[in-house]
Image (cartoon, rainbow, N blue to C red):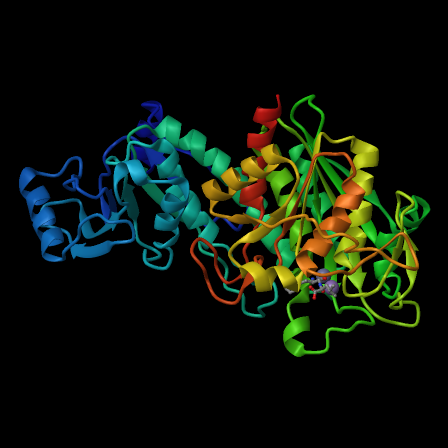
Length: 508
Ligand code: BES
Ligand code: MN
Ligand code: ZN
C-alpha cells in the first residue's frame, strides 16, 4: 500500500489532505489512477449515461450494466444500487450512486449524494470512489464535503463516547488537482459549520457568555483572525445598556466578541449574530417546557457569524469581514430586568423593555451600534433566532429576510439558493408606530412580531446598508436532515460565507 502511494505521489497524481481536526473522520485522497484493489467500489453515475469503470473488461462492464438494468437503476439523483462485483474485477461489492443529469448537478445535490452514503459504507473496509463520469470537479469535492458535514457528532456529554475511527477513502477522479483545490475550500466551510454546531449545541449551563467568548477566541486566532473581547464592565462602560441589561440577572454577565478577517483592504462587511446563550424569557418567563427547552440554541446566530468568519479566513478569501457577537444570558433573579424597565443603548436610544423575552433585539441593538461605531462597515447583515412569529409565518426551513436594499436582498437570495439555506423576504412596512413607546424612545415589542423585531433593529442600523435574517427554528433538529446529523446544523455559515463573497465582488 505504502509503495503504491509513493509511486502515485511521484507521478504527481495523488494529493491528500491530512491532520484534520477530529470531526473529519474521512481522509479523502483524490487521485487520477484507477484503483488497484478495493473491498467496496462506489461508482457515481449520471442519468442517461451507461456506467463505465476504468480498467474493467468490456464483459465486466456489460455485466454491471445488466445488473443495474435488472434493478431498474436509471441514474436519477438519490438512486442507489448495491451489487456483487462481477468476477475478475478488483473489488467485492459495487455501490452505484445516481447523481441525476450532468447539467443539473448542483453543489447541494452533490453534497446530499455524499451525505446519503454516510452509514452505508462499511467501516474497516477499503473504499474506492469512482467519479470519472463527473466532469465538474467542484461537484466531486462537494460529494466529499457532504460526507464530512454528515459525519459530525456532538458527543462531549456521552460517558461512553466512542473514539471516532479514522478512515481513508481513495477517490478516482478526472482531475485531481482541481478536485483538491475545491475540496480545500469546502474543508474551510466544514470547519466553520462545525464551530457553529459546537457553539450552538453547548448547553446553557456550560456555554455562558464568557465561556463562548473564550472558546471562540481560541478557535479563531489560529486562522489569523483578529479577536477583541469586551468584558462585562467594558460593555457597561461603553454604554451598551441594552446588551448589559439582558444578563444583569445572571451570575454570567454580558460579553461582546468581535472577530475580523482582513483578507482585503476594502471597507469591512459586518455580520452581527445574536449570542443569547440561554433564553428563559426573563421575568416574562417561558412557562411551557416546550418553549424553554433547547433555548441554549438561542446563540445560533452568533455561532453562524463566527463560523462564517472562520470559513472565510481558512479559505484566505479576499474579503474584509467582521463578526460581532453580543453575548447574554437571559436569566431571572433579584437583579434581573423587570418588564417596563428602561435601558439606554450605546447610541443613546432609550428602550422600554415591554417584554423581557424580546431580549434578542436588545443585545443586537448594541451589537449593531458597536459594529457601526468601531468598524464603519459598508454593509451589515444581522442574523438571529429572533421571533416565534417568524416560525409561524415561514416554518423552520426558510429564514425570513428584511431589508430596504435591493442589491443585498438579491445577493442574499442568490446565496440562499446556492447553499439551500433558503431565505424569504418579509416587508419592513409600512407599519406606522409599530415600536412607539409612551415611556421611552421606542419599545421592544410590536405586532406583527417578526416585523417589529426587524424594524426595531433597522433603527440601530441607521443609514448603513443592512439586512436582517430571522433564523428562529432553523438552527436545530432532533433528527438528521439531509446533509446534517441530529442536533445543531450550523445554519447560516454556508449562507453567509457565500453571501459575503457575492456581495464583496459586487460592491467592488
Ligand atoms: N429566542 C426567542 C425566539 C425563538 C422562539 C427562537 C422559538 C427559536 C424558537 C426570542 O428571544 C423570543 O423569545 N421572542 C419572543 C418575542 C416576543 C416576546 C415579543 C417571541 O417570539 O415569542
Ligand atoms: Mn426571548
Ligand atoms: Zn431569544
